[in-house]
Length: 139
Image 1: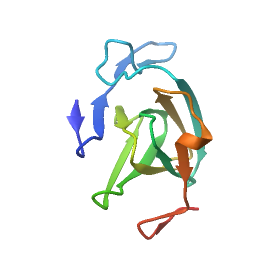
Image 2: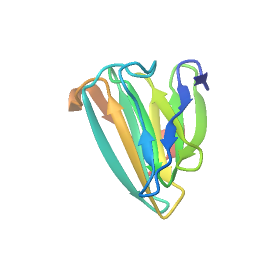
Image 3: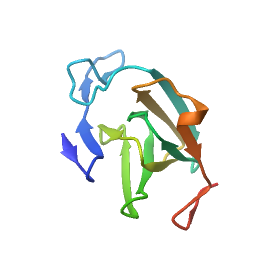
Image 4: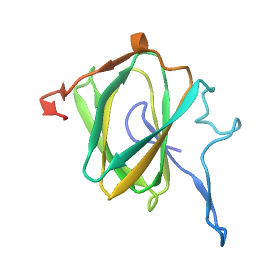
């Protein structure tokens, strides 16, 4: 597991080859990235479309991109630093974003799928959304 910023973690995931279609192993309870189960959701992204900026006060987001390729921007409001990273089918990585960071994501391919495993159930009071972070407009 690699820390790409102070608290942002990046880890390879396993692909099990299968002639009928590969199996992508996301997480299990023994994986160091597993922080509990609240909910999992899938976000479909069309070509060059961006979603975010999202901010979680308590939830840890553990994210995989099993289809396509997605460009993430992760902003730390305390240090004012912006991290940029792409993950997807060709570079099989899991990214974990702790509470207290803003992030957005944009598809770099025709269609992409983002799976987000959160350690707690999503609630509107726990989440914030904006269209501009640190001078970066996302729409």
